[in-house]
Structures are given as structure tokens and as C-alpha cells.
Image (cartoon, rainbow over all chains, first blue to last red; front, side, top):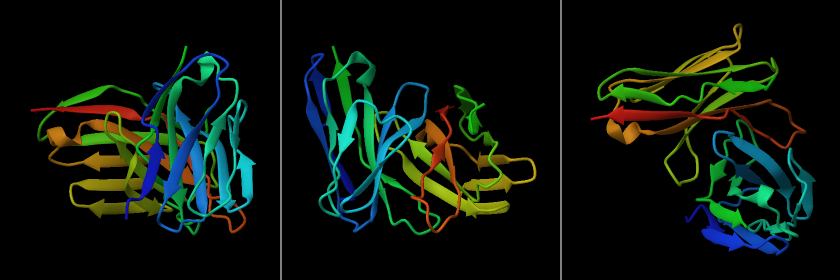
Length: 113
Length: 114
């Protein structure tokens, strides 16, 4: 099993550009999550999904969109990139049954200039 | 006040030392408590989890939960340079209808010096 994979690993965007961060898991997990991690700030939940076709906002959803058309994929869309979106983005997945430990991808480092 | 507080460090110890990492929390509904380890420029990986109060041991690692004090700890015995990483605590509420969201601490950066 590859676990959770994310692409790209690194990206530099100009202000106002858009992009999609890709996330795929092969563990047949129902639950998937997107986090951002800023230095010294821990992980903040952007969006999550409890299954194909079902998504919901987390703590910091503004400026992002998601979709979940399959169990495996959970892409994160950035529209009109802003410098405040410079961060490391992690995708995670879990079974959903307690304790619901989450498995993380390697992350995407995004810089918006 | 944050729901989960964690001392960010940095914490630097000599090889072989016993390390104590801690988190406090305010939500008494939390029931599952986890520790993640995150190496530099990598994603977090689950180290261990505990349910409710008590201790759990896994090799050199011991997780301890004191729900009465809303305090959790991770002890690392005989610390090694390979233990150098950021350690994040995380916790969630058991609920059949929830999305199993985790609340994370901000992480403690640990360096074990050879």
C-alpha cells in the first residue's frame, strides 16, 4: 500500500493564480481531511469529507474548495491565491471508526508571492 | 484559550535521557488521545494512542493520560538521536455521528544530542 500520496511536493504561485493540490489514498478509508500547517502553529483543518459526495468545512475554509467524487481522491482547490495561503498542506485519511487515528501524506509546500 | 495547549520547546536533551512531553486540554469530552511524530519536512505519523485515563507502553515510549487534571504526557526512555522530531498531541471525542475530527496541539520540537 502506498498510503496517502500528495502531488505536487512543492509549488510557487503568483498572487491571483489558482491551483489544485491532489490527494489519493489506497486504504479504502471513508474519511479524508485537508490541513494546513504554519510554523509553530500546529495543524488547522481546512475541509473534510466523510465519504464520496459529502464534504464539510473545517476551521479555516476561506479561499479553498474541495470535491470528493471517489473514495480514493480528495483534491483541494485554491482560487485566487494570496500570500496568506503560503503554508504546508497535508492530506490525511482515517477509517472513521474510533479511535479514528489519521494517516497523513508527505505534504505540499506552497509559496504564494 | 486554545482547546489543546502544548509547550512548543525547543527541547534539547543528551542521548540516553528520559524525555517528558506534555499537553493540557480544556474539553472534558475528549476520550481518545494520540501522539504523532513529525520529522522535518515530512507528514505526521501516529506513534500511539490511548483511550480514557491510564498508561500505555510501546517499547521506549509510554503515553499517560490523567483526565481528572486534563493532562497527557509522552515519555521517551533511553532517547536516541533518531527521536529528534516534532511531537504533536491530538485528541478527539467519541461520537457515532461525528466526523472524527482531531484537535491538535501545536507540537514540541525535540532534539536529542549524540
